[in-house]
Image (cartoon, rainbow, N blue to C red; front, top):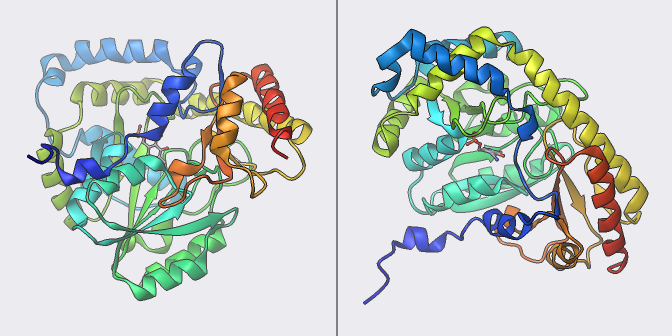
Length: 392
Ligand code: PMP
């Protein structure tokens, strides 16, 4: 007898990060491996108040089943925010509340991809997206990104030679690399994609976490018909509520609602209401400023420590927001080999391998700075620098 498991699930590797986090959760490890927001910045008191208000104001309604597209008040708040902050004009009918933006990825895969359909993904790219889409068994076309954004030549070639259904991007403070696409690059990407029927996914969980520089234009402003936006409260409020959203035109929303009903009927309604009260009573922008002030300082101390302790032959990105930076080692060094030596010295990070579609033993790695204080960042990077010297 063959395996009881579907081919679909057998083909998808376990989340490499979860495997790594098992090693790195030990107490005395300095971990730059996680991808978590800093728990010290969770607005606990405000959420406590908002929760009580849900019981007092909504009562049993907040405990009942609700609509698949999500709370109307919350969708209206999202509409206004897009209008105010990004000059994007949508209506609540363009939005579904999702169980984290991660569910947005799954619903898009379920709704759009048949087996062997073509999908473009940034390289390096968010491994949670690789995992979510892999279940629908598409043909992945990685397109390299650098400090300016997507490699336009490669993008053009893939688009010209294939019918591409989806193009996945994280244009602001990308996970894993921390890079942000320039406005010029966005415009050029839009010129290539805008007159095809490819849907570009702008996954933007970090966009609000800018601590330097100026905001860039959304792909939506260049090609509203071809763009789907994903957003999330995971990095700006808390991740455990699992509240995110998806913006698309109404014909796509209609299909996505069918996919959502099959998955979970609707996103946790109680938590949607808690978020609504939080947004009503607390100052989310002041809260976000608190987060960016902290992450900005943590990022600065990581950049300074890298300059001081890493060999000159090592390159790294200097993000203007978000939670990660990306390190490129000299070509002959495997980041996995470095990882094993570093863990022996109680330092952890994520080797680049899981962020690529078909590459192993790469010379790149991701460092997270949001969860480590400045002093510990300096210490961890100093030790990592010492371990690195043995490889040079
Ligand atoms: N997209 C990207 C690029 C991410 O980094 C993450 C979280 N690590 C997600 C989506 C998923 O976020 P959530 O489901 O919590 O909204």
